[in-house]
Image (cartoon, rainbow, N blue to C red; front, side, top):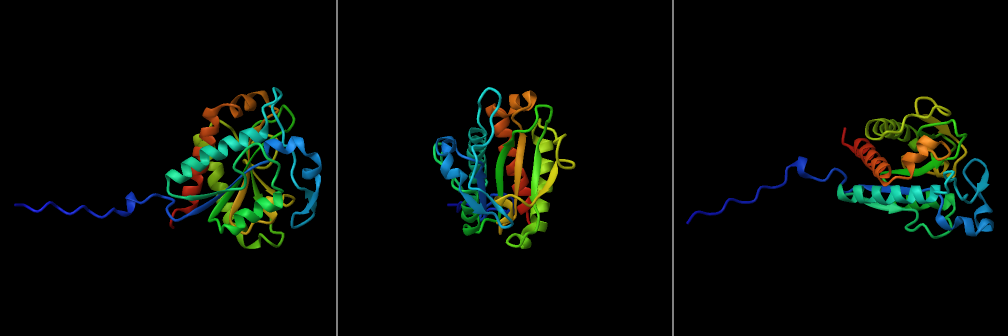
Length: 235
């Protein structure tokens, strides 16, 4: 009787691309922030200056909130990353709470020793402005060791957004879709490679028409997943 052939061992190409990796996701703001202005107005040290614990975020002219947008994208992104083998750490897991403060959000991701992280936002600029902007950290002390890696990740995010979504680069801030920032706790206090993405302008009618749809939200999640995989791919 013939012996059945042994099951072959998985080849390296069969290994999930993010197996063993930890990814941090910070969905900006929170749905309950509107209900507790005193809590979110408290001042925290962001590594360079004092800023508010958090804000309510912006909204489209029709009232669709940034907090809802960021949370939807974060959930799609979490599912994509888990599918690819990553362990995911979220700074909030619902859209009904208040906060946490922006310094605490950075701490959650730092304490998880994430391999990379992304802060998800949408802008509330003048209605004439269109497009996404990738905000990259500037060295202020706590983040000094991850500036170069964060800039490399920012380039990956920019490329993926242009490749995988219909959102153009910003026409009102930054250069070629990239902008350094030294006044945000999430970037100033990070000890892991991280960028913040403004996925579009909620006050622009064209951008808003994309931002409110689940199709675009899933596209952003797919783009961020592609950027994370590219950034963490072995050299």
